[in-house]
Length: 112
Image (cartoon, rainbow, N blue to C red; front, side, top):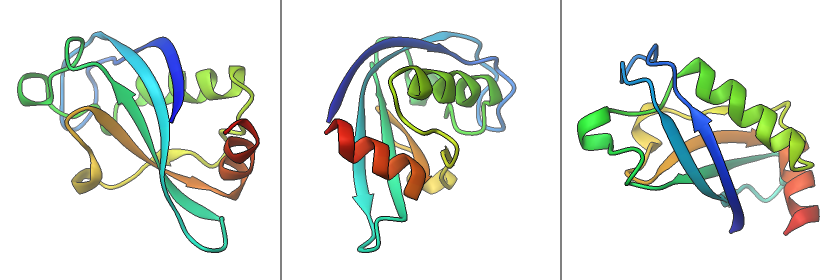
């Protein structure tokens, strides 16, 4: 787990939530990679105190959150060019699930 202390915002225009809020991000977890290291799952961990999926819905598909996430990843030295939301069923109660490719995985491995 790569520890992070950051705040990302939702704009409330996702398919699964209309909540506009600041969300505290606590970590980045590369939860899965294939053997070729060209595909994986990144879990962007957040605090339940700032986002409750049972009340607020899923952050999944919120464009502002993804834009700010890519900006944060770039600032932290990661290549965010192949980061996108994974499917709805992979979203968690305390994380946003993203698909990542070889570019992100290579830079994540350098930081780990």
